[in-house]
Each structure stands twice: as structure tokens, then as C-alpha cells.
Image 1 (cartoon, one colour):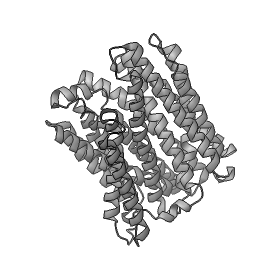
Image 2 (cartoon, helix red, strand yellow):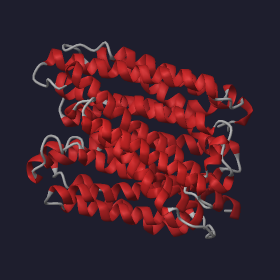
Image 3 (cartoon, helix red, strand yellow):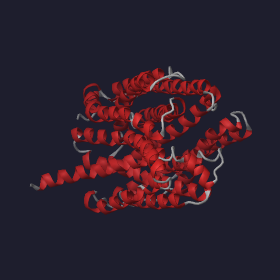
Image 4 (cartoon, one colour):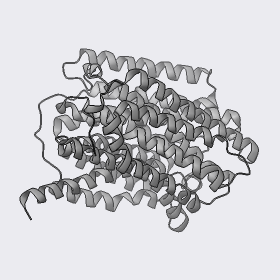
Length: 470
């Protein structure tokens, strides 16, 4: 075998690790869902605090992604990628072994820190390995993108199997052997990068993380405290002040966490808005669809996870085989807008679910339409967000786009949860009221997707010839 063939094979093996990273960080957001009731019983969570098993991970993950991207640019993506897996391993052990609420939440937050180091460095490594060949880059981004929905669905499925047949701590311990295997493989597969001179903006990292965390916390708490309550209003005002302080710090720093001029890069801002709204529509759909399957249709944890597999298969087919080719032919703007419109149509169809519905008639066709939309929109908007930046700012661009998607997911889920609860989703003993609430949630997510399509149509200017072809 020639040296060239060996090198190509090694790059594609490296892509496997990069896709695995995306799979795991998304899986860790969903795998705990089915296990939450047993965790509540064993650890003593209150009903109000239980949601923070999810939120502690998402807030740490979303809030620190920009820092993870900056560290990737300064220290080298390979080092930060490996460090992230080590941190994720520690957090997984801590969360699995927890015997108290605060230890569990600390473990989940540490997992989020690890994910915040892994995600942007993984994208930077992908661009380093495949950025020189547009055709290969399209294929690599497609495989990377398909790993996200696969991880989300696998989390629900594995969470049900593990909780039912083993025990809930193993939803965390499952990360340990994977992390060890990745750490062993990284030196052989991942490219080295020189350490660059530069400072780390600690104050900027603290303010943006605190601001994003406070915003998510305020929205999550709003249904219970009230949207007009002093707690909610002061929390949101505090978040705005912190994020404003972050922007002021970035404008004055010689070596900021985020060079604000990067947002003047053509199409970068528009692509990030598309990713934010895509996450705000897609994650609530997945969350409430799982509730409909279990609480209305009466499916068990295992059957509910299995019911989501056709949707996952459709997304992977679209991302790997269809979206890159269509993007190369029609352009990122056309495919992102089309994908968001189709996603909105699938969500509107799901909003027609009834209390006496069935999976084949009420869920399967609508969920497949939504999956087609997600598959069409995700790859072109992600590729545009990353490729718009300068090569030396690949880690920063990766951190920004990951932050956009994760924060959009968290805020979208929190806001739509509040809307759904008002419409009846909190009435878990009344199937009619519960279904009305879930239907409202799907309708709200459809509105977000359509709004994303309109905004993208007005703001994204990426030409057809700029896109990689599979």
C-alpha cells in the first residue's frame, strides 16, 4: 500500500473519532431522560430541581464553547480534544458514583466542560484534515452532522435499555471505556499543531458563561416563577447586562476571547442564526415527541427509543447521501431555507396529533418529513458558518457555531416548555389536555423553523459555487 493511501486511510479513521465525539456530546444530553425518575428517587431530587440534571450539562457546555474554541486555536486542537475527553471521563465517573444531589449536578457540569472542549476542537480537526479538498470536506461534514441526531436518538434508546436492565449510573459510566479508547487513539490519528502565542481572556469567559447560564436559568424557571415575576425579570436583565459586559470586554481586549470583527465576515452571522433557530426548533420536537410516545401512546422506554430510529435513519441518509450533493448544485442558502421550511411543515403535521392517535398514522410520516428538513438544513448552515472564517480562527468559528446551536436548543426547549405547560402539557393525568399541550409545543417549534427560513432567506448570501460537493 502506498504512503498516500495510508495517509488517506488515517484521515478517515480520524474522522471516525471526530464523528464519535459529536455523537457522545449530543448523546449525553439525551441519555439521562428515561433515568430521571429513578435518579429522583435514589438521590432525593425535588421535582423542580430534577431538570437541572439536564441543564447543568447544557449550561456548562454552551457557556464554555467559545473558550474551548479559543483554546483550540492557541494550544492546538489535538491537545484540547484529548483534554476534553479526559475531563468528560472524570465528570462521567463523578455523576455515576454520586450519592447526593449536589455531587450529581457537579458531575454533570464537569461533563459539560469536557464537551465544551471536545466539540470545537473536533470541528477544527475536521477542517484541518479535509478543508483543502471541497469534495472531501462535504463528505466529512455530512458524516459529522449525521452523528448528532444519531447521538440524540441513541441516548434515548440506550438510556431506556440501561435504566431498565442494568442501573441508572451506567448512563454515565458508558462514557468511560469510550473515553479511554479515544485517548489511546488520539496520538496516532490526530494531526499535531503548533502552540501559538496569545493570552486567554478569563474575564470574558466568565462573563459570557455567567450571562448565558443566567439566561437559560431564568427561562427554565419562568413557568414556575412567572414570566412577569421579579425573579424572571431580574434574571433576564442580569443576563443582558453580563452579555453586554462581555461584548464591552471583547471590544477593548488586545487578545479577546472572541474577535468581534469576525461577525463582519460575510455569511458567518447569518449561518449562526440559522443554526440557533434550527436547534430551537429541532430539540423541542425531539423532547416532546418522546413525551407523546410514552405518556399518550403508552410506549415503554425501549419501544419509544425504537420508534425514533426511522427518523434518525432518514436524517443520516439526507446528511450523508443527499444534502451535500444538493448543496453543491443549488447552494447553501437555497438548501438551508428549504430545509427549515420542510422542518416547519413536518412540525405542523405533528401538531395535529390526537389523544387516540397511533404511531404509524400520527407520528411516523410527520417525523420523517421533519427529519428530511433537518437533514437538508444542518449541513449547509454548519459548513457556511465554519468555512466563512479565516483558517487560523477555525476553532473560534467552531466554538461560535456550536454555541449558537446549543444555546438555541436550551432556550428553545425552555421557552416551548413554558408555552406547552400553559396549554395543558403539565396535566399528565389528562390525556386530552396533555395532547393539547404537546400539540401546541409542536406548533411553536414549527413557527421557529419558519421564522428561521425567512431570516435565512433575507440574510444569507452564500453563492452556489462556494459550497463543497460530495
